[in-house]
Image 1: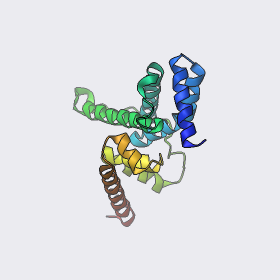
Image 2: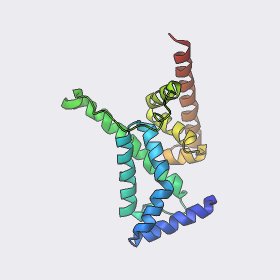
Image 3: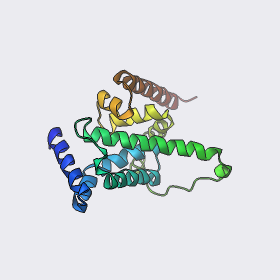
Image 4: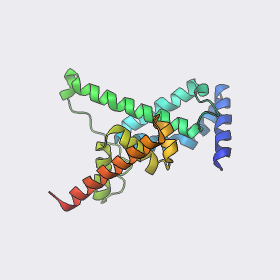
Length: 189
């Protein structure tokens, strides 16, 4: 399906969702759910948190299918921006919890296999995934949107609410930092 046709299909699904059509909602979730979860999982690294973000995003779409305004941004660009904002909110909440009295309690183990954990024996790939999660939040989101989401710099800028130049700089810094971490890991101390 061409990008323009997909946008029309998304607009049609949202209109049907506004009328309470559960099948349209399921179709929208099938179309975008895996990519939304993939971005959330790659950002935070915890399956449970990624699932919470997916649920939150799609629940918002069910309750407010008119939240996206056609003609301002492509639906997928808008959707990724919503997901990016939820990821940043989740990270802020995690930082806030560290300041609370019960912050010393260890987080429960996440038994669900991560997206990269399924690649058994791929230690380097798992290490790179951990390195990506240590990048500053906006750099991490920009990199994940570019690599995993296949988004252009203009789309990344729109999703993150920054200029295209700022998005490019986020990507440059993220890639430079990641390259340095990989080199350090491979050459040793």
